[in-house]
Length: 220
Ligand SMILES: CC(C)(COP(=O)(O)OP(=O)(O)OC[C@H]1O[C@@H](n2cnc3c(N)ncnc32)[C@H](O)[C@@H]1OP(=O)(O)O)[C@@H](O)C(=O)NCCC(=O)NCCS
Image 1: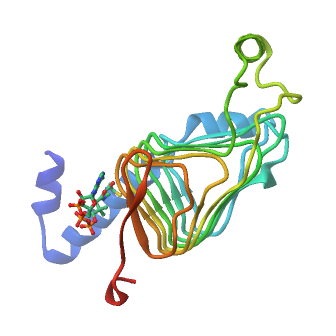
Image 2: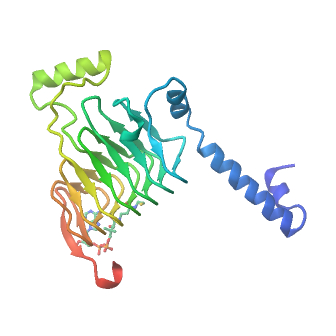
């Protein structure tokens, strides 16, 4: 008997119970994150999950600070991407009812504060730092240290905080560079490279991103 036989067999009541059981199993399986479980088992820092927060099997929590409270995922928020804080610094705070899509990378050496009800689509890159030094020799030395012993705790990456306001929406494949504030209700179009602050309830698009329009009162 196949799964579809199971759902179609019997009356409406048992059908809905089986459908609910299948949904529950699929959700439970989606939340089995071996990387996360192993990190917890071996005593590495991960993150703080508020009530109803969910990380899927695709999520990666990389916390080199040694302190799980430096990454906070707010109540009912759902993370499918990567949250990383460096050994030299960093903090990530995600508010309530947010979403972080698959393949998105949020990397902090200073701080990244994300408000409530923020949607961050898939394959977004958000870095509050240079990620590597500008000087070629320092960049190579940095790369060698990362390869050999992991991220160093004494590197200068010109870290500048990022802030994403409540009800913002960051479209697929967007890039948010260091020091940026996306104000409340701001929308970043798919593929945009954001190098300047995004005003409230405005849409920015392109590379470098510019304001393409302000939201009308009935769109806010
Ligand atoms: C921005 C967006 C929401 C459309 O908003 P909209 O109000 O309908 O905007 P419009 O389509 O009227 O476009 C306004 C202007 O921005 C431009 N524009 C829209 N999206 C753009 C993009 N991704 N890149 C570059 N320019 C874009 C349009 O060409 C238009 O320019 P014009 O005025 O010179 O003709 C949509 O294009 C988008 O990027 N959505 C993200 C979807 C996504 O990532 N989903 C993943 C799941 S969360």
